[in-house]
Length: 243
Length: 292
Image 1 (cartoon, rainbow over the protein chains, first blue to last red):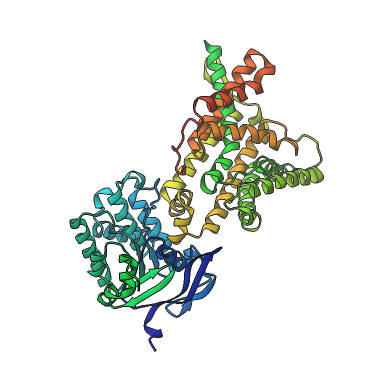
Image 2 (cartoon, one colour; image 1 turned 90 degrees about the vertical axis):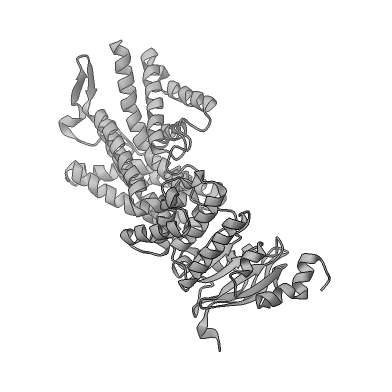
């Protein structure tokens, strides 16, 4: 059995808002150190999946297991401390805090390190994400690209063992995108497992080991990235070709 | 000339009183968007606590005050965890109704326990002492201390917000409570501490009130009105703004009283209306740590 090697397992996760089903019987396993890509059209339930994993939403049915522990009923702050870090598609920094303070909140309360350790950790992350020169700028006054960097940086400052990335490559130039891919590879070297939702497929494929295609809240298909991209389900979703 | 200087000075000192009343209100509104309608009555409760432990049980005023600060912090913490937490949410009415109910309960409990008589805290010569700021400008020691206390309390709160980790958690939560939780911040604890601090600050307001003027169980809501005006004039969520707002009301009331004693209260409200008409978001919108 693979269970002892899995970092995160979703078992039969379902969620509906009235008649609108946003997650339907989702099974998913993320192994130690694995990077999993998630693709799917807008409204397929990709961000909802992250909301369910991080505890912003509670599933109607199903269980979420983090390293053998059932976290289905755990509040979001406890899940963060247990090692789940997340970035948002639309950057949501603490706008009245400086860039450094944004990271330090995540380090102090998420990673639960001491004040001195937090300074060191935040310093390392600032340079990894190219935000050193912006450390004392109010996050609310950052341009979009830096806000996106801050999303990644703040998630890293919680010292996640599983990093959930929500469309962080969108809107980047090719050079910036290349840099981002390098940064994410660097993060993986530290043993961090990743689930990455992305529309910029070439960036995604440069990193992930496995791919999941979501459609209407269901897993349409999953497997090795090349196979999933060739699958008739993905062709049907993106090209409108009937499966 | 000296007369106007005197009016301004008295107004500013009065503003210190209103600011002290408003600080706790401003604090919980800024951090958790809670409008606490019982704030005035909780200040009166704190005044009775100090009255009971000092005048009745015989402790020195300073010790009684320190004791009350600790007790009110705990009360605030528990109040949030066991009462307010259940009604805080997307809807605005439930917390308003619950704090209004709390206001009625506190007033009547005090009435039942201490009666309707006016009381006063005993502070000896301090109550009537005065200092000369200029040859023709004398100010009361008690009002001056109140203003200084307000400034010190705000400075301490700002230190807390900007120099400590818990302060950063307050600011992050004020900024975006959902994201703050995702960063590992326990929102229930942060909110409970915020209400605790708000009530601890209210003790300082209670003592400055009790030393300067008579109080009875029913005076809370009227004081709360000036406090609300101070918070709104200053800009929601800005603590220094709240102090400035208190001074605007204080100066307006003092000027009104000089023209005709009957106009004192009205002048304060008119100043409030004037500020709302000119700057609907207050004098310092977004200047505070926690303005959204």
